[in-house]
Amino acid sequence: MTPAFTYLHLVISAGIPLLLYSASAWVMLRTIRNRRLEPFAWGLSIAALFAHSGALVGVMRFMGSSSFGLTTSISLLAWTIAVLALCFAIERQNRVLGAILLACAGVGAALTGSPQEFAESTAPGWELTAHIMLSMGAAALLFAAAATALLLVFLDRRLRTRRIADLPSVLPPLDTLEKIMFRLIATGFVLLTLALFTGFVFITNLFAQHLEHKTILSLIAWIIFGVLLIGRTRYGWRGRAAVRWTLSGFGVLVLAYFGSKYVLENILGRHWG
Image (cartoon, rainbow, N blue to C red; front, side, top):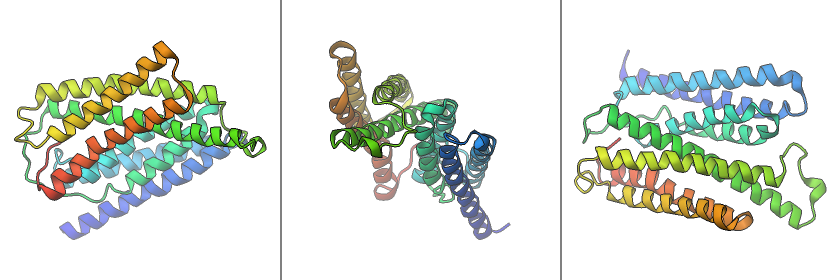
């Protein structure tokens, strides 16, 4: 099989999860009012996850198991978000958020078929794999927290403009969404702490590997989420302040994970993890 044919196959296999995720998100929303669609929604969601898994395995075999370029990393994050979305969708009141996450996973899955070649600057091993998995888990949870924060903004604006009649009846109450957001942040913060710890332990030379910017930005995000959790516990932070801190922390984390990776791969021509 020629490389051109293989590459085309990867692109096509990435489009299938996008379609399946999109369909599953739509049907999952419909199940809130029509329970008879539940088997169809779950079937589509699981099929999307399996198709996405197959596309990821295919691109890693094509480029090498250790080649986590920018697009592959985004796709891997999308896969983790999809798993989280299915966990959310188990409870009916959380299916709106689950459907949003499934749709977002589809966008990330569409990048699976864009492999990149790099001269590896680190030898692959279980340490690197552990660090990547912890980082992806933290990013997925904090992405879900950011999505919940945006949903809170949407609901809050509707309430403040007295457009209560326009509120979708399928959305959970504000208090419930806020509790979900903080649970996601707390769990994501734990995984982010472990990801930073493994990074400090396993990275041999930050400056030689051009990872100082990623590390500094990750630490800033860690501090932002830590302050937010302390503020919630000790001072009862909530509402707009909590949303701003959540979105700010996730924005910095995106710069740390993907902004620094873009600069490293496309400007410096290096690759790590």
